[in-house]
Length: 412
Image 1 (cartoon, rainbow, N blue to C red):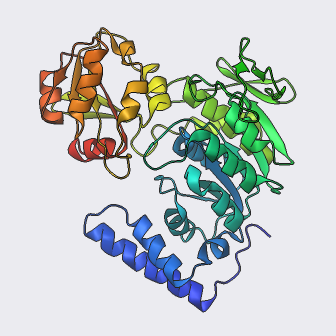
Image 2 (image 1 turned 30 degrees about the vertical axis):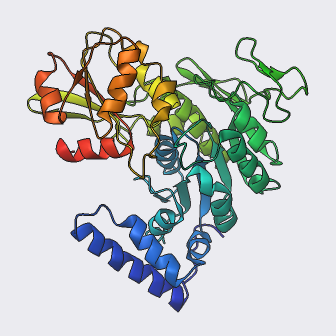
């Protein structure tokens, strides 16, 4: 029964101990939290450790291209109203990082786990989740990740017949197709601002028609399901039609959508929407995202955007012109080394903002901004960019490793 942890076998205990030791060494050496290397060491010693650690938990998996770290955090806060929670809150979302996180949750009742899209089916098989939240699918890391239709097909195959309750975004055709193989789906109208990966029908390849907020395939009839939960402005509508106000410290419509999905997940475990949403208000930042920091006597707001859909959402929540903006892009292994995605981002939305460009691939970004007809400055580093930015709080938007570089530089 979830919440009653059975003793680990000697082998599993050894694996957990060795993993913690490896993580401690890595952290002491200044090479991050150590969660990934710790998990790798532990799994090498006991390949079945993840399933052993998850056995006593009610596991909730969260996967998407964008928003999974924030949604994982919101769900975890909501479920703490019902019992102790263990979660990979820092976003180490592959099997090694997940194993490392669960190793610290022997007394927990719930395991709220963010999962990288490529690993969802495998982690679901190992952890036997009670709920799976699916938010969105769009292009990301083109040199590493599968094309979105292929990824949706892997999800569809992997989740077929799952015993978990699947909480899925009814507005994303790829998510609907992936989730439709599951026998128990709760549909949430969470919205879909980025539609450029969802104009063809994932079921037959036909062209999707999008009248208003609806969508339907004119050839095979595959269509948007009727949602039982919905985001409606500043409210979440529950299956009974009651409207619950959303009060978040996190900015933007995307985070309201994350809260709507999180409320639906929490309700699956008996946490009422009012309680769940009140607890979500406690979240001020997520792994440094949305933090406002002081650097060189200037206020900087740190924003993460890793792919075209993420940049589009981020542009919608920054302060209007003439607020200065710093953009930073790297193309290291964790980012994906292909920067062609820059051409899919509508940077004209930054017109009127004073822009500075930094990062390993600042020249790639500079070419893209020049083609977009924007005024910008290329800077050597964050120090120079902050120094020459005009007065006012600076919005800093960076992709994954560039974001981590900035957090280290500005002392956050």
